[in-house]
Length: 195
Image 1 (cartoon, one colour):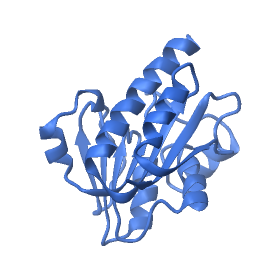
Image 2 (image 1 turned 90 degrees about the vertical axis):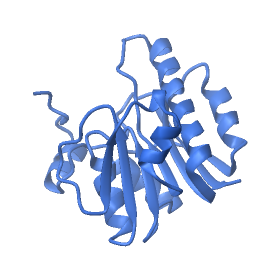
Image 3 (image 1 turned 60 degrees about the vertical axis):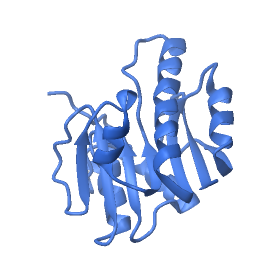
Image 4 (image 1 turned 45 degrees about the horizontal axis):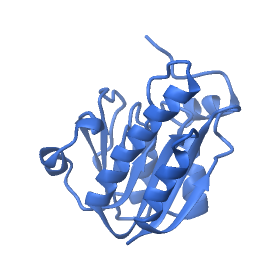
C-alpha cells in the first residue's frame, strides 16, 4: 500500500493531528490568510483524496455546514456527519454530476493534481486542464460572492488560466503556502467575491 507520508515536520504533525496527508496545512494557511471558510458554509472539495481538506473544512463549517468531496479514488478515512463523498471524474462532469453534488456552494476547493509524468511541461498542461474543469464547475455552483481555491502547476498556460479566473471574481490572488514542498511548481489561485 502506498504511503502518503514523507518524513518532514508537516507529515509528522498531520499524523499526530489525525489527518491523512500534509496537504491540510496548505488549506490551513489559505484559511488564515483569506477566511474562505465560515461556520454554516456549504463547501465543494474537488479532488478530495485522501481526505485531509474534507476533514479540515468540516471542522470549520461545523454541524450546520456541509462539505461534499469528489474524487475518482475512494476516500477511506472516517468522515464526519457533515461530510458526503461522491466518486466521480471531474474532467467528465455534466448536469447529472451537478445534481449529485447538490449546491449551491459558498466555497469550491480544488487541490487536484495530475499523475506526474516527469515532464514539467506535460504536467503543467494536465494541471491546467484540471483547473479549468474546477473553474467551470465553480462558475456553475458558487453563490454570488463565493470563494474558489485551485492548485495549478506553474507552466506556459498559467497566465491564461489566471485571466479566465479573474473574469469570474472580484479579487484574484496567487498564493504559495509555506507548507508546499520545496521545489514544488504548485501555486494556488484564490478567487474571492464571485461576480
